[in-house]
Length: 182
Image 1: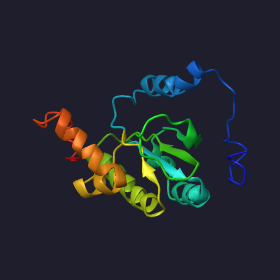
Image 2: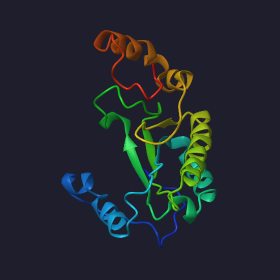
Image 3: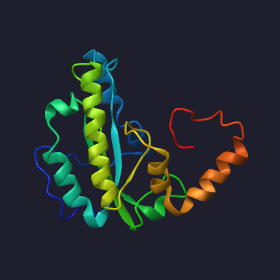
Image 4: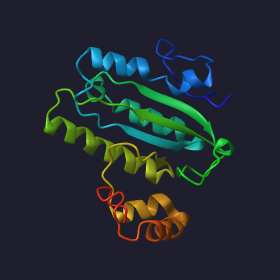
């Protein structure tokens, strides 16, 4: 089992076999809770990372030991094993190992102030740098500020292909102006 050897608090571990539809909609109850609690309108500086299996235990322990309830603002922490062979496209960029883990901190900034949101984005960046140094990647649907150099490191060997596709399909540089990729 891919999760063998990971230390989990038995009181917080949830495991179930569900249909594909139910898996794809697994966060609907979380969103409903956040909406019901009036938190959905707050900033959500989420962090989504792909961890190499060989380093997942240490990285998860490190991230979770430095993440407080206040950092999460009522949002969940998700950990999923993923098999590289199940991916059928070049993107997203993932660790090179046959198995890896998705670690998601689905934070809500409470209180919803710019200072709190920025503090969580700063924490995201710090965690991302630790994961990157351990050959992890990020799932870039989150809140981590990235420079052009960061993107080049993220995409690695496929950067020239990615950059070339951008130039070919978007020569006027209209798409993704705020991401700082190009």
